Amino acid sequence: MQARRERKEHWGPRTLDVDLLLYGDETVSTPDLEVPHPRMWERAFVLAPLSEVAPELADVPAGGWTGVRRIPVALVLK
Image 1 (cartoon, rainbow, N blue to C red):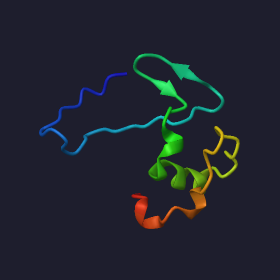
Image 2 (spheres, rainbow, N blue to C red; image 1 turned 90 degrees about the vertical axis):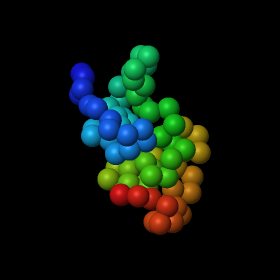
Image 3 (cartoon, helix red, strand yellow; image 1 turned 45 degrees about the horizontal axis):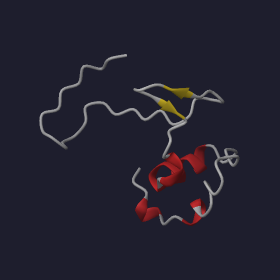
Image 4 (cartoon, helix red, strand yellow; image 1 turned 180 degrees about the vertical axis):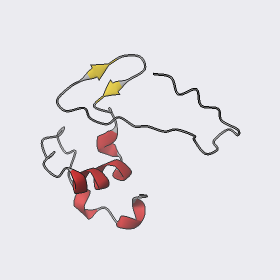
């Protein structure tokens, strides 16, 4: 899939940004896509909202959810 987006300025606003974190139990590893996202377990802005919408995803890589519920809301941009 190609979105054909054009950036007007480097590091400027994105016209389209899709982060595919999980796709059921599927795993994908290609040069352009890796699912589950390899670093999602390190990112508060991913884990905090994910814990709200899918708390049953407790079976993650070792230590992945440790402390997620203690992340200050101010650190999570929604």
